[in-house]
Length: 236
Image 1 (cartoon, rainbow, N blue to C red):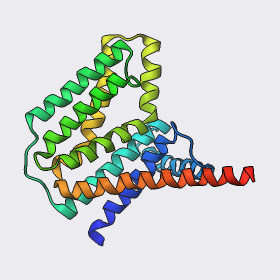
Image 2: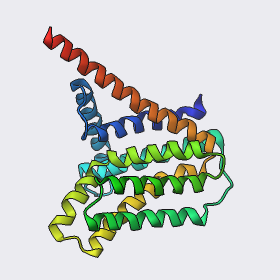
Image 3: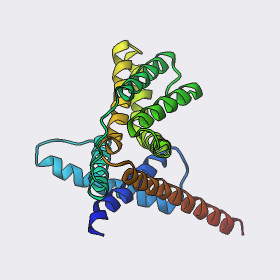
């Protein structure tokens, strides 16, 4: 049980953080909205107080970055404690597929098709899947699929990243430098999220990713049930 403590802390908090980010794009029940707002505020207060010791001022968006980085780190440590370290090295083709994602994102931003275009989403999802499939190796395509879904949902939950793409480029124009910065941000995000599958054994990561995705589905179901009950009571 003690070996799984860090894992459960990371699983619960990643579930809440991810669903909190998704709630910016979907309608959720009022009580869940209040809970997510309070949770986000307490995390922001915690990181702000810690940053104050180093004379650093954190914005709400920066606090979201710190939260994701912290819980992904706990996620990785928990997987290592339970399953141990994997020995297979990072494959060159995996790095190449991430480079393809960077180029695809850059071209999508230049053509105005990212991040909302269907063609962009299909291409980006495919390159991310290939990236994880090459990292985890043969026999672990289910993990690659799960982790692709996990990464896409987590990337979507970064509302500040979408604000950055939507607000940064129009102000200063779609210059090559600005587009490269945004594409590099998305590529870095995916590379950072992939740390657990790079260094921990696939089975340990697979179990924990499954719990996070199930947690997001449970929160979604609870929200929909609450909204349905409220609608039924209001119409009665």
